[in-house]
Structure formats: C-alpha cells, structure tokens
Image (cartoon, rainbow over all chains, first blue to last red; front, side, top):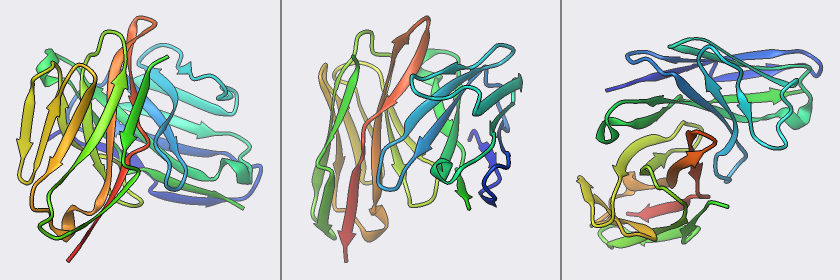
Length: 118
Length: 112
C-alpha cells in the first residue's frame, strides 16, 4: 500500500532555533500535501495545503512566515518552523493525497513529528 | 461553514460489546468521507472512504455506512486491540481544490 514517510519522529530544540520536518510520499506522486497540527486529545487542525510547484495555501491564523512550506517535487514537502518558541511545541502530521479516479483517491498520513521547544 | 461532528467523544466497551460511532456532517459537494484510526503518538491510519449515500464498506470487525447527513462506524464484537481514537473527515470543494476537514474524534477503549 501507499506509504508516507515523515521525519524526524521527534525533535527537541532550543527556543529561537529553526526545525525542518520532511514528508515524502514513497510510492506515489502527490501534487497536494497537507500539514496538520494536533494538540493532546484534540483533532487534527489543518495548517496549510502544500501544492507542488506553487506557494502553499495557509489556513486563517497560521503565520506563513513562521511555518515555511516548500513542495519542490511530487514526492517531497517540507515544513520549517522558524524561530521556534515553546508555544510551537506540538505534534505535526503531514498527509499526501493520492489522486486519480474518485474510487482510488485517498489521503495517507505520515507518522507525525513531536516537536518540543525548550 | 463546513462542519464535522463526531459522537460520542469517548466510549468504553467490554470486549465483545458491539456499538456504533457517529459522524455527522454539513458540507456542500461532498467528495468523500474518510474514516481513520489513530493510535497515541502516531499518524492516522486509513480505514475507509465512502462517496455516496447508501454506500457501505467492511473491514474485519468494522463496518462504515453513509447517509446524506451522517456516517456510522459499526464495531462488532470489539477486542482490546481495537482501542484507539477514530477520526472522521469529509472532503469538499474549497477555492478550486478539495480540502479535508476532520472531526474531533471518538476515543474508544475496549476492556478485556
């Protein structure tokens, strides 16, 4: 089955540093990837939609200068949390949409990245 | 505004005690309703996609159904390993694309 690989699984960083999270679709091309944030016992909150070869579309309230998204190829999207602060600590999850005939379309998720900012 | 509401928020069952989880939605132009299972500290695992009212899909002890307003995830004779959070998401048009919107999930605990 389709696999989405997300790295790293967890990261601890100092306040003020930047952290890059990678999301790769391993066996299909994904023109669209999504980045979510999830707090404990909460649902997935969509942060942005990443489109290959174009700028990401950010949800209302998400700072585009803080959460930089790059989707340079059909199999890789990256999320960089710039100048991270403790309030950015969260579980970040990416997903990739396998497109095609309607019955074949699915969203596959990475395993998530737990970010802890000290 | 599109909304996805899941109920109950939490559910405790005894092993073998069948039950159903609900996902009600209000969207225009539904392009798929997804069910996922999420274990703590992990990304959601795909279970089912439903596209039209009346559609049903099954996988082991799970069966998903869809109407024009809601979807049910039926769990038959659950086992402790079915314990997880079950997420429902709907995909609908948004600005020329299709954006998935998730509900808050139902946390299921199955006691042996």
